[in-house]
Image (cartoon, rainbow, N blue to C red; front, side):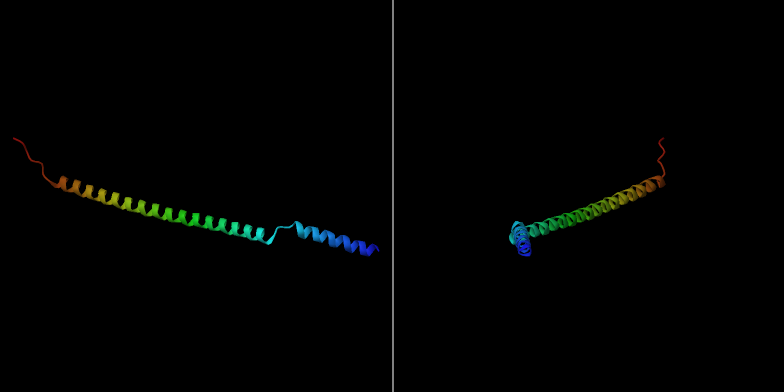
Length: 89
C-alpha cells in the first residue's frame, strides 16, 4: 500500500509540475522575442559601423581638402616671394 501511495504521490507531483510550466506558444513567443532582440542589436551594430566608416571617410576628405589648400597657399606665397618689389620714386 505504501508503494501505491508513493507512486500516486509522484504521479500527482509530476502532473502538477507539467501543468504549471509554460505552454508551447509561450515558449515560442519568448524565443521569437529573443531572436528579435538579437536582430535589433545586430542592426544597431551594423548601423554604428556604417556611421563610423562614413565619419572616417568624411574626415579623410576634409583632411585632403585642407592639405590641398595648404599646398596651394604655400605655392602662392612662394611665387609671391620670388617677385621683385617695385621701387617707388
